[in-house]
Image (cartoon, rainbow, N blue to C red; front, side):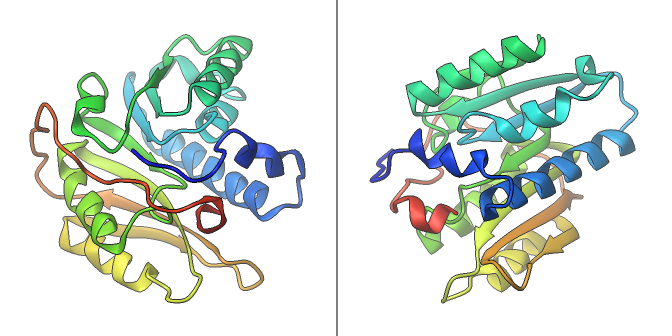
Amino acid sequence: MTATSDWHEWHLPYEDDTSPLSRRLRLIQQHINDWLDQRPDSSLRVVSVCAGQGHDLIGALALRSDADRVRAELIEYDPRNVTAARMAVAAAGLNGITATQADAGDFAAYRTAAPADLVLLAGVLGNISDGDVRATINALPRLCASDATVIWTRTRRDPDLTPAIRGWFAGSGFTEEAFHAPGDVLFSVGVHRFHGQPQQAPPSGAIFTFTTGGASRR
């Protein structure tokens, strides 16, 4: 993995409830809650790719009485973010969440996380090459359980790749359930459900490599 931004400081806009990042966070959390409400299973597995400090999943689960149904792995490369996520998990009493320091761009990071019922791809697709975006979507059947849901984000800064992304999801066995593209900001949030056949993940191998700084990730 390579990175040209301070991914710890990247989280500072969350302190402003009116920031685009906070608005995006609330959308993601709402979809996590909707997903949990629609899945009565007694046990659910979640993986967060490049999880940062885990604000989306931790924030959603901290307010739920059924959070113990979830077993989640937050995969994050920056050790400061991993520490912050672990502290937030402990503070919320979420014993089912593990924050792991690893390169989420390699299949090796998912040995204990896949297959997952929910895959969070927030802040990933805007920081990798277009080719890696497509490769990542093509790789999702190796991370997803049957009927899994994927929540993803991507900037719509020109050239806007989101139309192609939505098509690539369809081509990989997913059905779109939601797509948010607010007119006054550049972020987008998509939700897709997997209706294809899950595939076994290889023990290792590159999925994507970070190539950009923080501006596009927002």
